[in-house]
Image 1 (tube, rainbow, N blue to C red):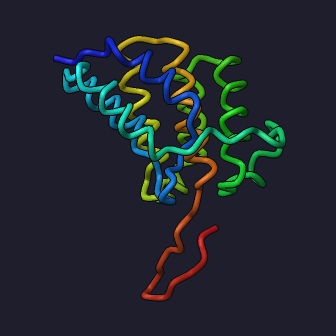
Image 2: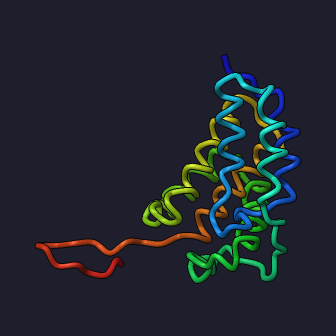
Length: 168
């Protein structure tokens, strides 16, 4: 039986951290926290997160605004992950999260493979928690998931007749 009772405290802890770990890998914390809640292990969330957070890096600061008409040039720019998170704060404040998700999942789908699919997986975990209850922390987590997906965006080359061609 799912138990999301520790989701908000966990997301508040995570709000201070970015998507990367000190060892250079991607953080699994938001996904693991939600998965534990979905499995009914609310009791394990905060103790696990306390240990895991030791390897996490602080949330980077946004540097440059991403405009609604000029977002394409920022796709795949991991150095702009904080700018993307800020962009999605605005997007999610201006429209229901389901509408933002539908619009941006379609736009980001060609880059789904980037960063071992962590952006789409993180967004999926955020959606599952939002389906349980819509809270500001869970909406913010969706924005961070979409922001990571956009920042890590990378389209793989495709093959036609055995010849590799560049992605469009």
